[in-house]
Length: 328
Ligand SMILES: [Mn+2]
Image (cartoon, rainbow, N blue to C red; front, top):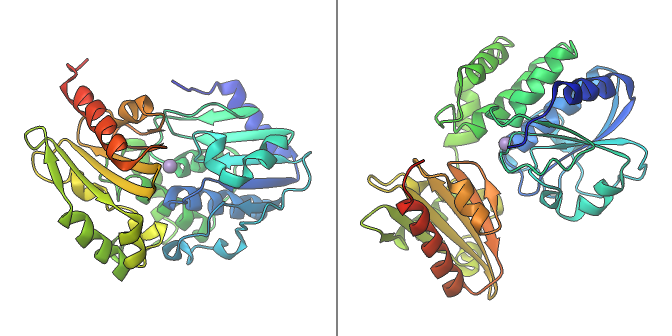
């Protein structure tokens, strides 16, 4: 399990204090935590007198565009000074940075801030706190230690980071510490109801069209313990779905009463299938790991380069193995 030492954390704090200019980047297919963490540390460092440039390999999803600084996030590889420190957020490995990977690797110092159990400790300095519910929770701790006063908008970005990675404080990763951080953030005058409506409740029409297809294609295995569905590229295009519209669809497979393990296949081509896993008790990061993927205990995924039928049989077999494994 990846754990950072106090020395490494102190070194990171020292770099954040002493260096003047940073590149910040978070992972592909951005979620609320990656975007919220990126914008929060970006704005906080800027308020602290630093120069920052923020990057993601994909556009900031529509529903997070209201966050302060979202328009400053670039998809262009404008990291031209390799002597600068690059801070990688919420990414278990460098491949999650998509077409930025090579350039980031060239930078002299890489600071890796993350909470995934599967983190590869790829940084020059690593701050991997697996007990943190979100990378945003780690950023909050760093900003406190740096004694950088939070603005309302920094607090809002951090709140969005934590609220999304905990599924609105519903997932098992939600700890007393998570609530303590969220509580301090609300002190900045945030409106949790309005934020929830924006980031959770309101979904695009394509999302509901896709959900309809996913539910129509539901299959049940292992006496109701496994539920799966498949979304072809065709269906996704017909519904006009962007990657953001697919977020959360997989949860519906897991949420069925009696189901322990939910699986969603996204067919990307004749020899590429992305797979999402959700569970109630089973450790799906282990399941994903066996299939060259990764993630969290209750939410993980993998990508397999074979045809759909082969992938489906392989995944089902491993899923059954995990499900029937005696508890440790
Ligand atoms: Mn995260």
